[in-house]
Image (cartoon, rainbow, N blue to C red; front, top):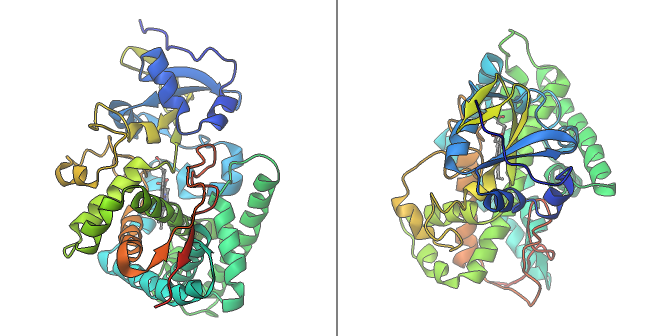
Length: 416
Ligand code: HEM
């Protein structure tokens, strides 16, 4: 017989989760002295789990599936419908390979070079203004760089609009009210845009390099032997553009870390082999809040640690809390890049972009891109670009998704 899952006493935890998206799961688990508890989120019964063992369970594809797991409001904004996130089994594997095949070291290096080139050009414009919001400025740099890299044409006059649309898909996408509706509208417009690009490639009206993301998506053949319809293709092309622009969130986190822990600046500047920059990027991804949680559904009834997980039940894994779990991390609340010098590579204790195996499971395929761009940005921020941080409230707004300071991190860039 299985034991009863501890319960969060309230009727529905949606509000508690909204108030404290990064802390709710962990604080309840601590209060209940348990790695799992049951509650309702958006009225649906949900089992919340935290920690490395829970992550190992969650990333066992035999036990969970993704079809119908994500809340509708996130499908309408963040993910889009018909994309890889909600697929399972062989169909998922074939679609996922399309993403994984884009991630060669040489292609990722090219994206890094485009990023540096774009940053350098933008820096001169930033220096001409008294103040620049780093979050907005970097989103624009990333939009320019990733569109070029992915084979998506972007006219100069279009840059502000496309930056805004791509940002609206991840920034406050889960919010309630006008922001949510703006995000839905942005998804509609962005899908029209990317669908048009795919159709022009297929019609031979737009030539793109065969190793680009736009080409891969336009030509991709699914497990059922069919090409993607234009809407699904647009969703998948946006699955490359949107999260690459979202790396701006981590770049703001890097700027915050350099401001809060200035001792990291010198080792970053003196870093000749890239090792410290690698540790720094990893520690920023561990320490700062970005994706709070991932969701799936129980495939077949099973028991875990004596608790019953019934078929169909929604399960939410605490990503942020797992990255701070004291069983896996010494002094988890300390920012310490050097901890990654001796890290054991456990794919279940460090899960900022999901855990387990990216090729066979739902772990993010974009981690190498993320790390490459973060390391390039860290070099600019640690010395490549001179800037001051004028007085402002730099506290992370922990109720905002993703969490960044309210100011977006204002800087005053030096002319050279
Ligand atoms: C999935 C985080 C960057 C493409 C995911 C997941 C997370 C995540 C938490 C879900 C894991 C799960 O469902 O179990 C992030 C963060 C990023 C980032 C914090 C930093 C900005 C990227 C980049 C790309 C990308 C740069 C592509 C260029 C995807 C795709 C999936 C995914 C396609 C779905 C994978 C699947 O369902 O099999 N990401 N990601 N992400 N990410 Fe990322």
